[in-house]
Length: 248
Length: 161
Image 1 (spheres, each protein chain N blue to C red):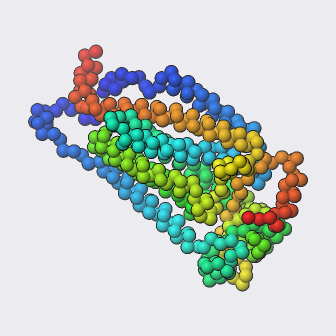
Image 2 (cartoon, helix red, strand yellow; image 1 turned 120 degrees about the vertical axis):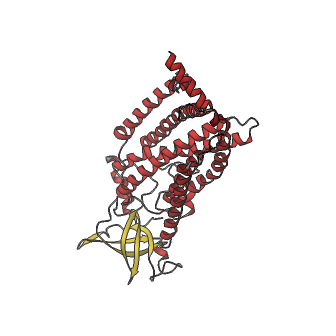
Image 3 (cartoon, chains in turn brown, green; image 1 turned 30 degrees about the horizontal axis):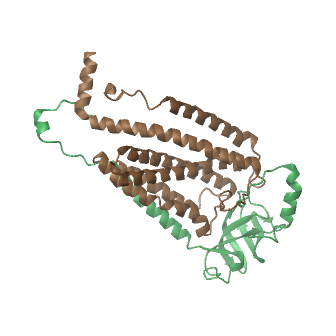
């Protein structure tokens, strides 16, 4: 059965390998920045270093879910309804869920160290947990079965509804009194409340995690395309491949 | 994938579509989980979130119910007495005494915003849970900033918000 789908030997190309090397190098430098070069925080001490993973993770999740919605909108509005948009939406959704989970776990650890508790039913934390569950549901809906076009249509509609949660999560600290801090960098003005190297490390983290996201989403989209192709070829193609294997 | 050769009869009558129960079960679990999350949030919201200056005056921040009170730990007010921690919290020039059984944990210290859960009894907030609220300011810890930090600390009970 392998040879039936093995015509492309993997999901990598020269460009994705370059992107992969860049991603790994930037991640290594981020680890150095976060763990060695950047200073401790005056109040939080070393626990502030969790920020260099926590904030970029939720940043990537926002980008991923934004991409899921954008690709879904393109799929629904385009004349030819190319399934590549659906696969990009699905790939970005999966990666977004992964990074929300990372953000929730790192946030919980950071909360224990700075707030004194792993979890509170606070507006920001609750809305983020709800976002996580919503997109888990989105991924489940993608696997409900039916044709690829049915999958694409129903998941696209859900993605366009789910994206409405992002502003709610982001502005929850302003809408409700929250234990979670308000924005430090994206304050809507020029007033940034973070010292030099900490700010640089945070921005470098955003870039590194964005590269990681791009790398993952390209590979995942290609693997989803292979899965779709495999399903399209169906049983007869698989039997044919087996016969060819036996002959060769 | 089932690679068993098909008989001609199978080709004539297509196999019944198998319903995918796992994703359906997963969606049900996700819906329940979403409900639990929202319920927990709303249940917690029953404890009114009050600033120190609103205790006793704002609706929901009265003595007869559990409240969450937000304020800044007053400088030089923290004392450990028989395993409990006592301190004063201030906000908008109002002050309340807090008694907490145990060590608050986190980065609890003077001049830092905190949220204390509990009941107000005879003007003292008897708290069973304290969460330390760190600000959105990140300042590198280094020796040259010590004076600056001390100045800020000295001014903490005056400028709050």
